[in-house]
Length: 288
Image (cartoon, rainbow, N blue to C red; front, side):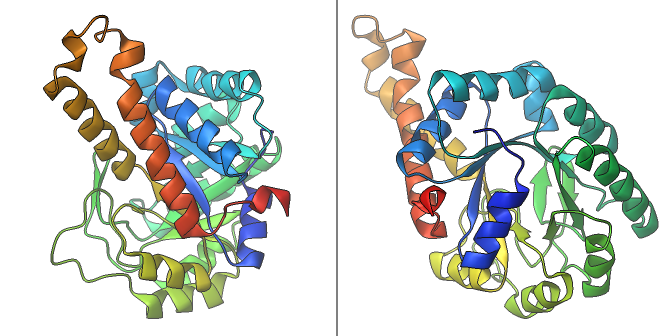
């Protein structure tokens, strides 16, 4: 069933696991995520950045793609359609386009402007039963052209953002987007603990690819209830597709047919999804 993300994340927050947020890039991606999560009986958040939305043809195309696949595949687990790192205008557009959840990322704005715009998005979204994620501080790495050094979020700023009526909060705790460098210092659990005590709501961990399992599990214990995964699925898809072509399988019979050409990569995405659901502890949670 298509839902906003509030109830699934509140449930995860109360019961000590995390819901996976997987970014989608096309039909194959979306189908792989939906089928894997249905098989493992867990709620899921399917997200797209503004860049991915543009690539796929627009916000309504993405919302309709997820909805139509959800219906035609007879998906029974809760599914949220989420905007990842949305601008003010992008978040408003997704509220109108049929998304069930939006992230307004005003972290690059002056704090007061971020708070003001977050309140506006909350009012618009909640009037339509849509959940809202917001961010303060920065998440390291690069996402759709927005780069951050990954500074640790200020606890007082997190508290102010949480008071804007949002449903879950993203805050930098040393995490980064993309592939983690060899000299990465790891998550800052002291800061995560301080933020968690201050906001008393589900916390979002961006940059879920490559964080060691022990750090993931400790973050969940300290209040992280949503973990974003994108790069790992992209890498798995690219690796499986490359191996298929390098083995010459695209030249065997009708191996060039997109349905055959993209199948290994699609299956590789499913394997990543299975692995993350197990790591995040959400498997079977849709039945509880």
